[in-house]
Image (tube, rainbow, N blue to C red; front, side):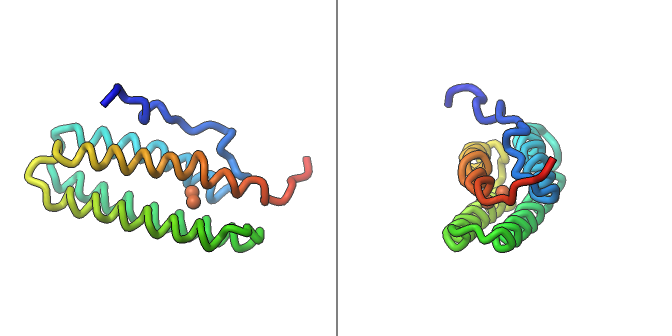
Length: 140
Ligand SMILES: [Fe+2]
Ligand SMILES: [Fe+2]
């Protein structure tokens, strides 16, 4: 694997959709993704990392729900497809977390976790940005 390109992803104001809830969740997501990666690569006790994963999944689930509410409110035309993508990502996240629960050695989980984070970051920076076009214009 070449370097840490993924972990150079940072929140940028270009990612703001104009919804304070969803924007706050996206901003937090970048920090959580980097922190989860750091935790997996650290020698923290497994219970801490498992607890961390549980919080990550819970945050992701409530973010997806809030984002789907937003898409519904603004009449986003591809809501059904986007929701399916959320379900797919959530299932994949739960799979990786189950792997972490079951693992004897957390280093074994790093590759799967990296690939997952890449997919999640890609979702935020590409798929979620499509919502922006449909956000109501804000008056200055
Ligand atoms: Fe999102
Ligand atoms: Fe999304």
